[in-house]
Length: 211
Image (tube, one colour):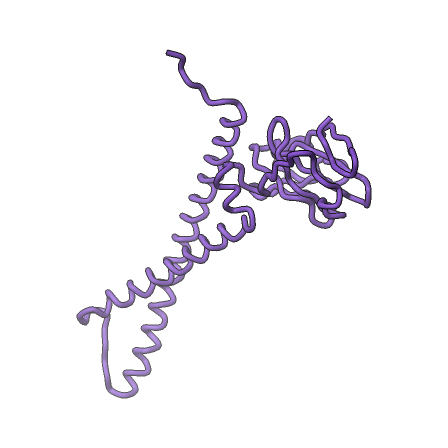
């Protein structure tokens, strides 16, 4: 029997997915820890203020009373859960509208949209771009000015995350924030050590095709 091996593009996608999962998990852990500490302090402060108000009315409640400490801790845990839910929703919505496509392809970042006969130039926003599926993985097509098409390997040189289309002339990696010039692909900001790799393309009948 022939043993199955993971193809190189498949392995790159898996590696990017694993790296993103680790980063998201680390961010969630830090957020949960900070939220729990801040929420606990806030609940204790609120309890102290309530004590002062009740004391003025000759009503006393202490943390030692039944269910009081549990209520304070429960409030802190509740606020922490709300923070984590917000973080989860923000993580999902950040990939909208390509979240489903990203899940199926495993790439993340801007979702690849494979063109059957090339990508119409009219579909590439002027001053920005779009990510399509190329012969060897995702490719970022950019139209810095009307009629000028640039193409780059969309995998960030740092850890292979699919970069986002340029905003205000700058291409940004959503994972660690590396930045590249939209008109040349040159590196503007690390942690990536090099710029984006150009991809050879041609325009035929108003559509961008890979040369």
